[in-house]
Image (cartoon, rainbow, N blue to C red):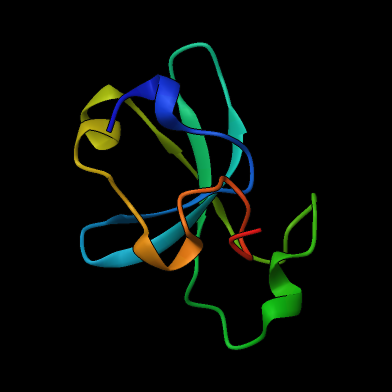
Length: 77
């Protein structure tokens, strides 16, 4: 993917795991890994799970998540 492909709330796949974008910076993307035991942990900010800063190398390794419908919204709507 490219930096311009990201939007807050969109879901994507990186290293075999699903992630949700929580912020888009000038050169980075901030995201949470969707592996918490409870969906309420993703209510934020602040989030009950760690946010990760993805740089240009990480961004290139990302793929759109087919389950999110590519709409940029977690529910696919």
